[in-house]
Amino acid sequence: MRIVGVDWEDNTLTIQLNHSVNENWVWAMHNMGGHASVLGKDPEYFEYRGNTARIEAYSHEAKQIVDYFRQWLPNANEVYERKVKQDQEAVDSRQREELRARIQKEQERAEVLKYLKF
Image (cartoon, rainbow, N blue to C red; front, side):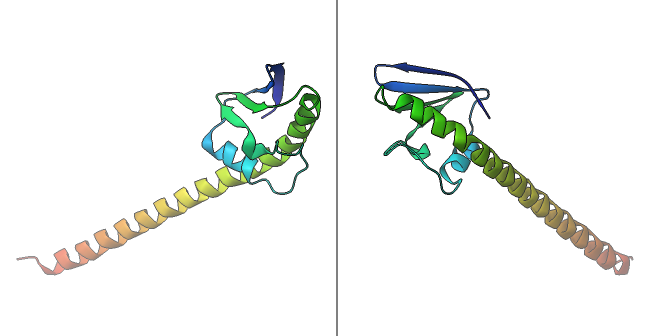
């Protein structure tokens, strides 16, 4: 994720991103760890929708907020990447366990059926 445009109008700063955000990316932005920010303009105060991040900002704050947002992106992207990998590993692990259980159940059934021949 990277910034591709910015706008400021009526005390609203809009940061346009190169991709639409999703729930996991917003979670990563909120959970990236320590960061500097303009007072009251932390990542969790932004409204994320589509490929934009918006926040109320006075004219004298706008540039500094964008600069901080730019600094947050590499950290948030890294946290996002780790979360996606962890989530996929959890899905893969669950699927392997379900497959293992299904195979075990089929083997047990085959053993019982072997002795039930008439």
